[in-house]
Amino acid sequence: MVNITFIGIGYVGLVHSVMMSQLGYKVFCIDKDKNKICNLNKGILPIYEPKLKEYTILALKAGKIEFFDYYPNIIKTSRVIFIAVDTPQLKSGEPDLSKVFNVINKLQLFINEQSVIVIKSTVPPGTAKKIMEDFLKNYNLNVNVVSNPEFIREGSAVQDFLNPHRIIVGSHKVEADLTLRKLYKTFIDKGIPFISTNNSTAELIKYASNAFLATKITFINEMANLCESIGCNIDQLSLGLGLDSRIGNEFLKVGPGFGGSCFPKDTLGLLKIARNHSQKCYIVDATIKSNNQRIKYLIDKISLILGGNLKGKRFAVLGLTYKADTDDLRNSPAIKLIKALKYKNSQVIAYDLIGMKYISKYIKSLKCASSAEEACKNADAIIIATEWLEFKGLNFKTLIKILKSPTIIDLRNILDAKQVVSLGYNYYPIGYKL
Ligand code: UGA
Image: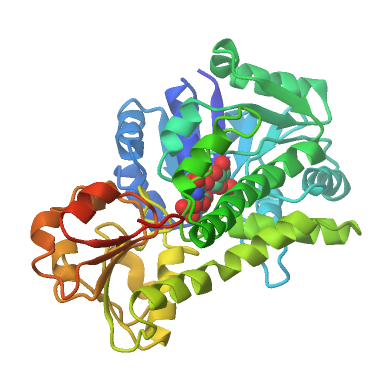
């Protein structure tokens, strides 16, 4: 069994380390958060991600994974060391690489020139090169640094890991590339494309992928606005557009704008990268601006539905997380919407089984209900802000009796329009009118 090490057991590090252990490797995981490590060794996960807990427990029981809050000597037996620390956004828009370089400083005691250091964290082009130069300058070590960006999504990370669209590997040495080919043999044997390139190209592919997807979403949201004005139907437009295989049907779902910890950070990061190289990314710039306008557009729409004044209106907001199947509230459009509604002196009662747990970190005195039904009591309107399956399955027949007004504003277009209208609701989806 080959040993590998992961440093930085956040979202990306945890999913990849656990899933690499499922491929048959013995994995050592290091994170400085003592509490997190202690819990992980007991099978308690810091995040909610479908199926991840089960895989972690399996790996722990089989002795295929170990978690440490320090750098144990055993990691000297790992030829491949993954760095997956987070690279949060600085005020300047650039990612903060200090954690990556801190790891490098510690790591020099545990590696040799045969070691392959793999950067999983999202870092700007040129970072791997700088790491190699630093190793040489500071420690006289000529190490291999490979750029291997990740493309897993929160909420479907396990599935995405098991079924990647491609594996991107950027390196400067054939041997390092070959080591990664061996490591990912399971996927290569399944026919998954393995793209070998240089470090900077691999690093830029990550930013370009996220910026392109964010642009696709923003494009469809703008088309939805146009559909509302003209009287067209966005869901049918998305279908008609996406069936062109040159366009593709994914990431064409309308909504309250993109959020989360990646698209907002990486679109801004790409702008900064372009600026640093005296280039302009007009399209990405427009994507960011358009997405920033999304909540204002929706607030105006909601206001119009409610008769032009939001003051004193009571809303049941269903969903807090930035998308379904995650407990992540970072840059959640639902939270931005709630803040905007409160700013207009509306009353908000929210419900999100998973997201409510940490909401006080983002909005102080938000009233949350213990069920969707409770949130809806006496509401002037229900707003569906996150596409949790639970909301699709609500009993709208009985729900209508406890509402002040039978109004549903569906910002994710998840409900069956005909069905709710037949029950007596005024239903307002995004991008089409009934
Ligand atoms: C995104 C990328 O999809 C991953 O490939 C990448 O690895 C990850 O960022 C990352 O850089 O770590 P993630 O942020 O987890 O993944 O979630 P997505 O499913 O991509 O959704 C991002 C946002 O776009 C959400 O707010 C979601 O609601 C929105 N979205 C997505 C839409 O509004 N419409 C769509 O059709 C798809």
